[in-house]
Image (cartoon, rainbow, N blue to C red; front, side, top):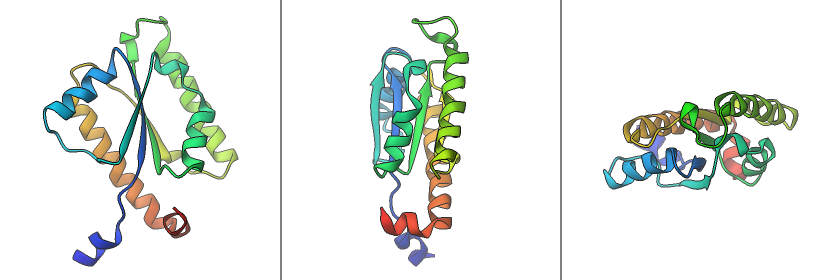
Length: 145
């Protein structure tokens, strides 16, 4: 069991977060000392519907194990149909990943509100476990990273 833990490397997750909605929730997780992967890198964007599927593909091609979209949901202040737009881009991203030989399970999306620290941490920990399992099934990805 100890050797299994030693063989597992830390996964790297790129998090797209939104400035006014999910950033405060993620900050709250940190200031509350809630644990999630320290190798998560958070990039703020104004609105989750503005994320480009190509950015997700690029992150995976450059070595990130997964990309998490902390979506605005219905709280978006920029566009009234943010939830639909973000859902559409998520679908396009999964299609793009398949077309480029990437596993679409390496991208995850969930609405994260400004006080959703525990929810964010739960999503991140589950995603980290999922990525660890994917990495175990894709030995060449682990060795090549």
